Image (cartoon, rainbow, N blue to C red; front, side):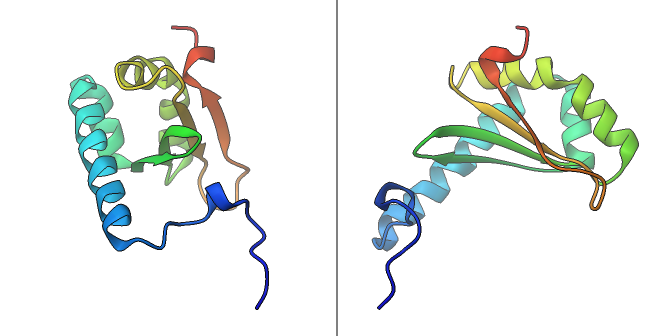
Length: 115
C-alpha cells in the first residue's frame, strides 16, 4: 500500500456523513454569498462558473472565466466579491481562473483586496 502524498488534514474524510455535511455547508454558504452580492455581481457570476469551497484552510470563492471580457470584469469586481465574502469569513480567498489556455489562476486574500 502506498503512502498518501498529502498531509492527513488535507485528505478527504472516510466518513460519508461528514462529506455530505461538508457539501451541504458549502451549498448553503454559496447561497448566502450569492444573496449578499449586488444584482450586477450576481449577473456576472451567472455568466461564469463559480463555487464556494470550505477546506481546512478556510473559505474560497472559485470563479472560472469563460472568456477575456468576463475575466476582466471579474478582476475589476474583486472588491465587491471580497465585501460579500467578508460577511462570512475574514480569512476567505478568491481564486480566479482565466479562460482555458490563457494563463494561471490568480488568488487574492479577502483582507488584501482593498476593502
